[in-house]
Length: 434
Image (cartoon, rainbow, N blue to C red; front, side, top):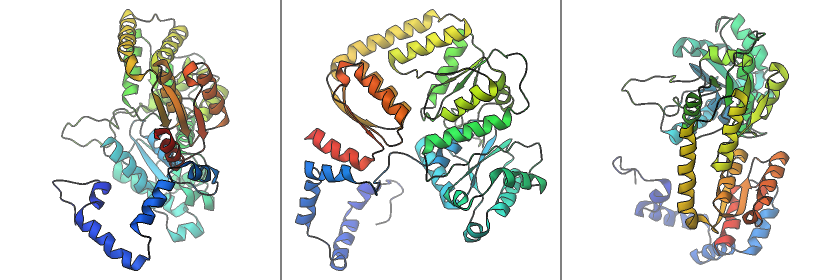
């Protein structure tokens, strides 16, 4: 029954092995369960229209949500800055989940610590946990910045992060001048993209304080958003270097989440230099590559920095054209011939593969910006979306996506399922395949 270290099985394959199947059979005599025929009958019923109507009518239960919680996005943003250690004010179990989730996805060591709040902190508050945790983190891991966020426990009892950080500095946990930005990230509201936005705003407001100058540094700031395809950051840098544009990527986690294997462990590979992030307040403009994971940050930049912001999603031909033209407009730099040639190759590849996708029906789920971009590209290819599920949707996105679908003849048959989960998607897919 134990795993074979030379042939690790996924849980699905593992539970079909004879030892587990026998175990399940033995349990049935104690469980008073249904017969195999009844289980098969109900399973088949859940694929039909009657069950679909019941499934979509439920309101008080979520099954397999297509989103993560706020702290996941917060620590994802934090590691995009040089030498930054994410610090979660909450229990060990929560931060272990975040670390494991990102480590397993990227196959890279993801560092993050918690204040290890337990029952006593839940009653009396987590101040002492913060004092001890910051001191230990600073001494043990030698970060250049510690970015603090919260879990449900800290939010429910009302931990005041700013007051706790000030008290910790007064207690000598970290030097007074040491940057400790924070964001309140309650898991019971919003999602991982909300946490990314809150942490990005918290870090930028902390690092840029007192750095505003009379003149612009001429740079263009880029905020990737909660984009798990970190190679996109490298592509943005390549394009800027080709066009001769001075830039700062705010939260460049491409090296952290895709680091080279040199044989030596580096706890903080890459990241946006803190001095560059501090000087971003003097940039010429800020381009957000996602809209819905940067809403609060863009509002803060426009209001406090007095700096224009633009949302541009360089996906597909249309989106990339708009992005490059906006870059050229903001900087006065010409789009190089090499990029035009690359565009031509992309159009040629799309033309060559068009017959494989044209008229094909598809379903998709994900975050608002990613779904919008992928759907737009698939519409360009002639594919026909049927089910579009966005659990962490909002009214602005709903309107935006519906306008995109209406602009293509092949987008008219699509249904947007806002706020629904992956068990809803299953009902849709059962009928779609049938």
